[in-house]
Figure 1 (cartoon, rainbow, N blue to C red):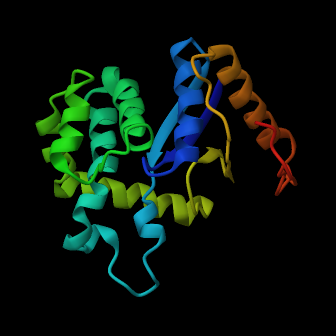
Figure 2 (figure 1 turned 120 degrees about the horizontal axis):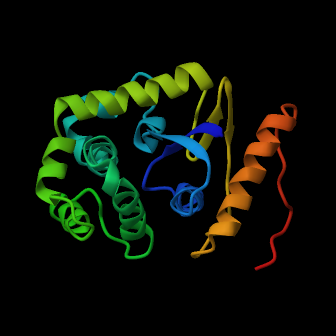
Figure 3 (figure 1 turned 120 degrees about the vertical axis):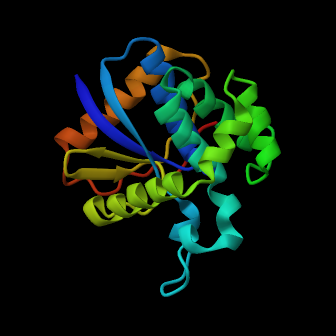
Length: 199
């Protein structure tokens, strides 16, 4: 069994691609144990010395989607994959503003969750504290700077997958297994980037 963690923020299209691969493969029975770790891109862009997003009331709505994902993960694990994919789709397919509580609630209602309740809990101090804890741990322990970052033990790698599985679970599994294989067998490979991509 492969065990790994992976970061996410719903704002990132590359996180969306990677998480679709992971969810498609897990749903199809991939033998992985995956920890889904929230990571705030908003906090990454806060200048040094400025107020962190978790302490800035003007930025509270920026954390609502990420917090809603955490609530779905922890309180409704049987619906987490549905909610996770729906929130990515709302942002990247529909262009919805996930900072708006009513928008978030409607997306979550659509996958069978009590949207208003999830969004209300996402705004609480406990959930915001969990977002901060997860983000700061990722930075301190693995020097994470973005999403998606895959973490295996003490090793972490930031990845940009350019394509989505589009329902192909075999492709999804092959993609993530290949990525994990590189992480495991080539620790000195720091950058591997195609100069062009055929579309």
